[in-house]
Amino acid sequence: MAILKPGTSWADTFARCIEAAPEAFAADRVANYWGGSWRHDGQPGSATSPVDGSAIQGPPRLDAQTAESAVRSAVDAHRAWREVALPERKSRVNAVLDAWTEHRELLGMLLVWEIGKPWRLAMADVDRCIDGVRWYVDEIDRMLAGRTPLAGPVSNIASWNYPMSVLAHAMLVQVLAGNGAIAKTPTDGGLCCLTLATALAAREGLPVTLVSGSGGELSAVLVRDPGIGCVSFVGGRDVGGQIAGSLADLGKRHILEQEGLNCWGVWEYGDWDTLSGQIRKTFDYAKQRCTAYPRFIVQRGLFDQFLAAYLPAVRSIQFGHPLAVAAPDDPLPSLDFGPVINAAKAKELADQVAEAVHRGAVPLYHGTLTDGHFLPGQDTSAYSPPVALFNPPRSSPLFHAEPFGPVDTIVVVDTEAELLAAMNASNGALVATISCDEERTAKRLADEVRAFKVGVNVPRSRGDRDELFGGFGASWRGAYVGGELLVRAVTEGPADERLPGNFPNYTLHP
Image (cartoon, rainbow, N blue to C red; front, side, top):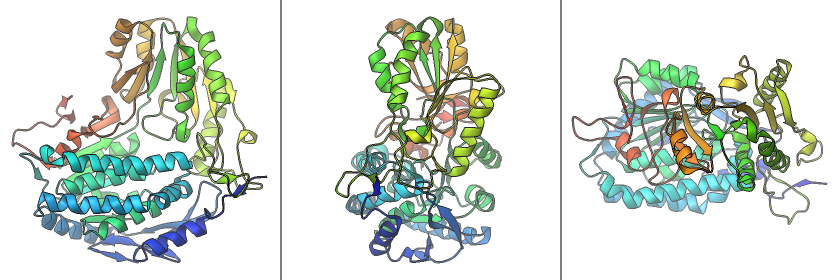
């Protein structure tokens, strides 16, 4: 019978937060940070952990008027910080990274409880953030040559799935480049992890601001306030489109990373052992990431061989409670994924799958919760077992949109033209892959796929350090990031500079 690993309960984890940063955490609530101090303002919201449905601390939601005050304070902090010399900025950022390293396991455990990441993936998120920012500290001098900070701070509105390696990472690079950084805590999770990270950054005098609130209440302030120098958004197309519309008449610098249906095409291919291992990896974190692959497009003549590789890989997936062990001294389980972000998302996925099957999709694999690894009697409402559907109907959301959960859809094609049409179904994507044995054919097909990164026989990801990142079509708006481009996106260069990116009046690829 499985038990909760001793010392890993939410009560134990939150007590460690209070001990590590008593200025930011109280027994009954979490604080906002603005104007250079921690403030017990806002209305504390309720929240539940996707891991077991238990109550955890919720975001202290500010109203728009208080958020306006926070932004004005952030503008003042930005103006002071941009005058701080680069060596001093580097020294302070390094001190923050040392503090994050000291508390890396606590940051990782918060990711487990707040957004359901398995321990292995949670620690990878924290470590990627720390290692990535250290690379920027080493490289920042050359990147800032001839460049200056923005006129105002960067406003960050990001999804819940990567609080450290995307959001916290971006904030520290923005600060390193001479800007203030504002972040809105994601509504669905990551509050305490970001609060602890911010507390450790604030102790070193970094010009960071962390506020909570509903998107409807704070979006206008965090997007349209004239003092903000850049808006950085990571999330879905619906919200991203609204932000883009709000920015249309302002001419404000922006980075809007949005979803796309990332596809994996299989054409004239035969290395099935390699593909089988790659397929299992695509289910990491229940495909809750912007570079997940939820659609496989397979040459009809290879479909039987594809299934022979695909089905064993999916059956081997391990999911369940990230902290459940058989004995107290056992290591935490090495799972492919835990829960999805909440019970509502799990129900949405189940409903979409049921509707797709009702309309004609063929279930190739449909896991059940009995396949999972759970504590006796625990709430499993946020868990979604892996599913694979053949030929989803065009009327289904699973046909044209990213499910953001452990659901694959598979279609077969007969010609290269059909393959490319299917891979470009969502008007742009962030990543794609072509599995093809013949190098010239693979390269020719890859050149026709509307994705920012296209792998040949390997998956692509957001990348680290000097790897660039962006999107084609509707998957991206504004400046591209990654490597030197992230710094260029949040600094001013020559007066006639055209940043690489996807803008309303031009698109420029690096």
